[in-house]
Structures are given as structure tokens and as C-alpha cells.
Length: 518
Image (cartoon, rainbow, N blue to C red; front, side, top):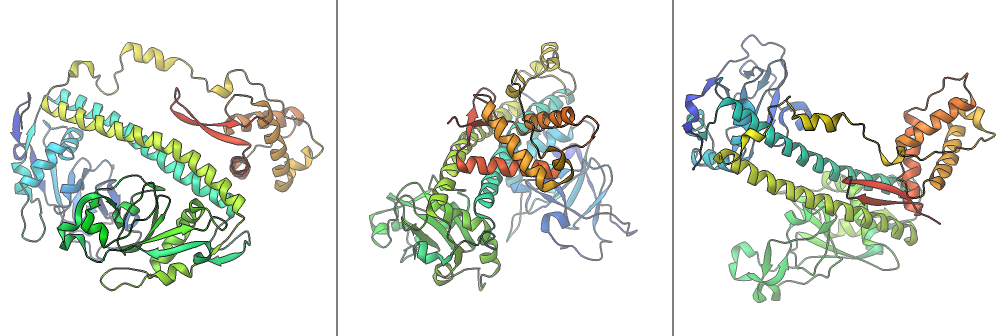
């Protein structure tokens, strides 16, 4: 490890804390996870997994660190930002830093590539590696002046915020897809829209992958030109499987089978009923099932969407010996709704549109994560010009000037919305059902006036509220949450019908809805 900062042993700047809950105070029990840091155990595990007797649990006070000795190597460490103490498992190690070490700087270092290498170098254990406090003390850390520690933590925190934002955008797009599915098809488990129901095998062919020998037991099977997909790659794929980490040799391919691009892969062992669609020809073992839709019966993206709702049921009912698994007959016999193919194709078009936007966000996320890795390495090496990084809460003058300027959304830059008077207006103020009809009429009018201006739910609601006040100034009625939900449902239907379309605004770095011109 080389750095322009002094390299010191962490033991000189941290002190172990072992306060127990002997008084059995009523303090919440927390866990420390690699993704969320300090998290209520009942929230993380969805049930109470800790002992009823917590008198031996360790007390963590605000500002103190805690980590799981067996999981710190994957990032399970954090310091407590809560205003009140919490309890953690007796197996955890709790410590506090001296005033010369900034908590955010230390945390980011221990989670960095350099820090993780130091952690691994100081773990011990016969069965499972564990970082005891003595090992933590031996960790070497570059230690700049306190102000520079704060600047480094602040800079890295900014990039972390952008990374979290990109992940949130991706999750929102996934949630949007599920919402569109529900609007178009209803809940498939309950078959809310009373579609015809058929066994999955009626919608397409379902067969297991082929691998007569396990590659881990026969290395000569690997290392050729034939892509090999395994359960983990299906589980982590999302909608499409775009990459692979292993390949079959000619020998491996001879004892397997090549599946075409467009195959829906379904896991049936360990990870149950996770799905992903091949974007290239590939082989996979018998722990994965391949589904190929019959062209006149189903679209592969509709069947993929079905598993968003059936996956948890299949997993819950999967028999478990050494590991959970389901057999081919369970999948073939799974009874699912079979809506018209035209409607499935409309859904598929929306999915492909959203997936295109997701791919841009994913690339942006990848770029940000690469930037973060390079930036953190430069920071800990002392290669950044920290004089250009402001202290938190102190912005350069030019940044303050820009931030003070009002920001106009595109829908606020001159579009005047004219919402028509209707005979059912007065009834709409009293009846939710009549109000839904009125809102739908106004939404159509709004869409017809947009032109090239993006659709905005907020702008529409403001225009609708203003129109209500104009027509009935003596009534203080306000649109509420149910009206907002109806507007969202209308948007999903408009997307499905092709009346609205989604585009990506590169300048604003966001998704926009645009009216489709007749």
C-alpha cells in the first residue's frame, strides 16, 4: 500500500467497547447488513430471530461502530447514526474511533478495495474467516488531516448518492412494469379479469436443460465457444440474460444442448422459479428449464411477467431435501391466465420500451461504480487535489448562484391547459365514481393539448384543481390520494393503448411521457 498520506495502524485510533445490556433495558435489537448498515432485526428478517433474553447483547451508542466478524469482508460494518442506543448480537464486535479519525472516512476506507484487502489479510479461522478486534487493530490505513478526511468522505458520499439514485431509478422501472402488467391483465394468481386459464405447457414447450456431467467435476468440459448459463446468472438477470461467465468446450457441448436466443430460462433448484430471457444461443444444466412459447399462444415477455407473481408461491411450496427444488411436471401443470395474444403483444412492446430505458440507466450505474472505484483509490492514495473539494455545508459562490435560480419543468414553460366544462361536474364533487369519469375526460383533453410537451401528473392535477376552483369557487374540494391513483391507472392504460409513449430526455437525464399524435 502506497499513499502520500501517513500509513498508520488502526489500533492506535480505535477502542473496543463491550457494554452489555445487564440492566435489561428496553432497547431495540439491530443487525448490521452490507447494503443497509444498521437495520432493525425484525425489519431485515421479517420475523424475530434474536433471543428472548437480550441481557447479554451488546449496547451500541450513537457514533460507535459495530460489525459481524464473519461478514465484515462483504461490507457488514457501520457506525450508528441513530440518536438512541441499540442492541446487537453478542457475537458482534463494537468499537469507537478516537477524535483524530472521522467516522465516514473510516467506514468508506474499510468498505473500499484497499480496506477489504487489509480485512482479508487479518482474518483468521479454521472453518470460516473471522476478523477479531486484534485483527482490526492491525489494519493499516492512510490517515490525512481531519479536514481532508471529511472532504474525502463528502466527495465519495456524493458519488454514492448518485449510485443509489440510479439503483432507485432501475427499481422504479421494474415496479412500473409490474404495475402495467396488473393494469392490463390483473393479478394472475387470482385471475382478476377472468381470462381463460390453461396449463403452462399449452402456452409453450417446457424442457429441462441438459448436462450429463457436472463441470466442476470435469474441467475438460469448459473453455470453448459455447456459452454456459447457470442458475445464478438467471436469478440475477432481470428481464434479459445479456452475459455469461463460462463456456463449454466441444467435449462439454457434446453432452449438453444449445437453446436458441429468446428462450425463457426458469430455475428449478436452489433459486426457485427465477426467470430470464436469453439474448444469445446458450447451454444450461438440468437445474434450469427452458420455455419456448408457441407463436399463436403466448409472448415470452408475458410468460416472464407471470413469474413475478407466481415465483413466491412456487418457492414456498417447493419440497426441500438438501436444497429446494421443483420438478418439470409442476411447471408444465401450472395453471395460468391466457389473455388474447394481441394484448400480450401490446404488453411486450411496453416492456421493450422500458428495457431500453433501463439499459441506459444500467450503463450509467456501471459508469458511476467505475468512477467511484477509481476516485476512492485516488483519494486514499492522496492523489486528489482536495483544495477543490468544499467542506460539507460550504458551497462555492458560483454553486450558490446557480442553486438560487428557479428551475422550470418543461410543462411549466408556457403550456396553457383548457379543461372543458361538463354536465357531471357538480356530481363529481360528491361522488368518487363520477369524479373518475370527469378526470378521465379531462385527462383526454389534457393529452390532446400537449403537442411535444411532456405529460406531467403534477401539472395536470394542478390544472384540474384550478379548474374546479374556477367553476365552483365556493367549494373547497381538493383532489386526493384516490384521484391520484386513478390518474396513475389512466396513464398505464394510455401506455398500453399507445396513446402515451415513454422517451428518455438525455438533457434532463430522466424518463418522459409524451402524447402520441394521431
